[in-house]
Image (cartoon, rainbow, N blue to C red; front, side):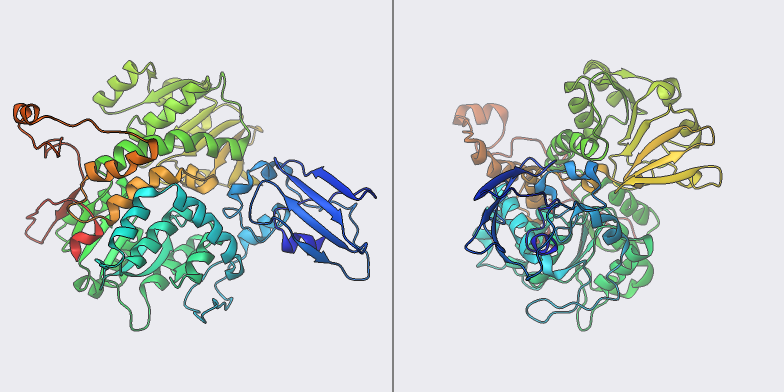
Length: 551
């Protein structure tokens, strides 16, 4: 059984095989089948898994001592097994679910590893998972047409030649496509994770095998997180001249620990509202002397990534962690920006009763006209079955609210950082924390009341599930593109996927509207990606976002 699992990590339970020549057995609870076929000897088997192309057939030679097929693993963690096989890299492909807890707790910092080319300048969970991660990346490439198109068109020109990019993002199959596109366009890269739970270990291994140093693994501690960031910045005979950040932690660390490096930095690309806010803080303090590209406010990020990505992934994250049924549940969504709109739309479609909290009267009016009741948090907190924060702010849900929640209330965050839920107030002697699944904690009050906290208040969808590759292709293409790669052009590159055909303006129509026949069709003041280049005198200019702007 151990040999089968080491060769085929999708087989997490070995069940008894009857003495027939062929036996097809459903391996509960995966929606798949594994077939055992006797070979010429009784100790030779073939295994087929029809839900994946990773393992179509595997011949296994056992030792003389016969394995015991009638014993199940002792720590199966059945509920976490209900995740789909496509998520295997997120939870570490090299092991069955019954070893997941111990694997997340172990740190690879003291483990020396090398890739097939001898590179040892990295720190990930297990380099041996690279083949599985490569297949995950190849699947993502099929859903990221514009980024792959950009890579193909510009690969020979090498427009990013000379760029030394240090990146801090979620390390998933989708961001791996982005990283490898940057490399294909001529950049040198070093990468680190912006979230301690979102790294897909097998994907990180595949990126390292491709030659890019990565310092990240799923389940990092807080100390590990900052250690990894430091290692990504510090390298012998290598200094970054570009920062691609998601949340501002990497930028903050360089400003704090390595201010001399800023003289070499030619630009910062930031894609989250949290990171952009931190850049504006630096600007107001007169400390932002580096060009900073605000990708978060681009049309492609706001209207597609924030809205459509969250609309699909919020349900995935909640289902995988809690198995909850949404019909009839009373759900409170804090914030009705693009992320909140996506979450509310998905929850309403499945029959949930959705309430919204807002401070912005325009967003509040939008929520009302979309059919949601807008209330204060204190007015609805006692009856809520779920509370989801989507504001990007701090202390949105505090101890006072947590004390008033009903037993079993699910609390999670869809904003970038873990500041929206006041976790500090929950680490007190009278409250007990109980880990029931990976990224699922029960917080137990003295009277026995429990609330269910997901991902320790960090970003739910990337910590506990996956996100649609196609939507991330739109954002990634915006991050890479040159000035000519405006939002409208990025959008047009994705239309072919839907076999969509754009209409064209006549000369007379274009003249009537006062625009070019070929666009742009939106005015310059329409919300779009801008570069805010601040100096110590607080002057600034505006250009379209993209790494290629700096080279």
